Length: 202
Image (tube, rainbow, N blue to C red):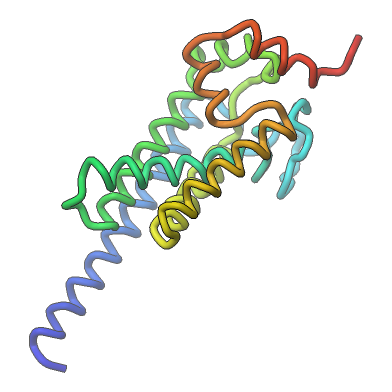
């Protein structure tokens, strides 16, 4: 191996080590902050499910994956696109670490008492107590999957997949990333009434 190739290999290994350190640091920080907030490590039911398919159940946002996992995949699409446009000089690894940092910050924010209470005012989140730590970290890993997909797929394919996922979620659970953000900013009666139609009649 030539000296140039050795230097390139050394830089690659160093970049990979720094990436792994950054990912581990961010995820451990996320879990630690949520633990400090009082969020349970796993569902208080005492067991962990791979998939929770009932968006109205107390197990929603408590297990490894649920309907909102798809929204976090879309986070990865969005973060990749924004960082690609705003910081074209950044390497993919740098953008990846930034995206994960944004996702972790998002997860921490939405598990603050103020945001939890705001979510509870929405039709589909009545009784919401925040995410379990395992669910929150899983959401961040879903964002990672979305980021990697956006990196490898053509732009048009990423855009089409995001629209398809949003439409699929709107059809299945009357909620998606777009509606979630809108409701976080302001509760519109029309959206609230439409989502309330998913609730069981009394």
